[in-house]
Image (cartoon, rainbow, N blue to C red; front, side, top):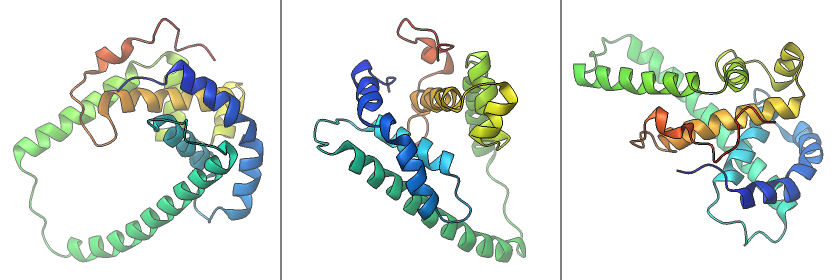
Length: 193
């Protein structure tokens, strides 16, 4: 999977980013407890970035709002599933679970090592922001204050980290590309922005 094309980046900058403040206000009135607005906005951008084409979108602002609503609904369904899964897990804890097969354990460790390698290969500031957000769970605002960056710069670094992981692993798991093959950035520095 390739990175975001220049034309897609321009389309997002012209048709999506100008509506972010309005989108955030709209989300504040609609977002259920337990969901983070920054996460919803970031996932919305990720979904828009991954679209095969954008030529069919006649009303970009409405499309952005609909995509954000879709993210909220998806996350709400996941939260309900997690609650059900937690109930099931409690029941399963009462019985002894079999150990995963050795080859499954090895494969899982290798995949985890590839994720770590990909994150470690990110530019320093991008890696620091990504870890603070996705591993330590800080909000974009907290990261911006801690690192003396603008929230938009924090968001760009997070997006860059997510794109790198998507490039290396795709949406459904392993893609067969190694972490080192994603170091090509099309002639620009990942530290820009």
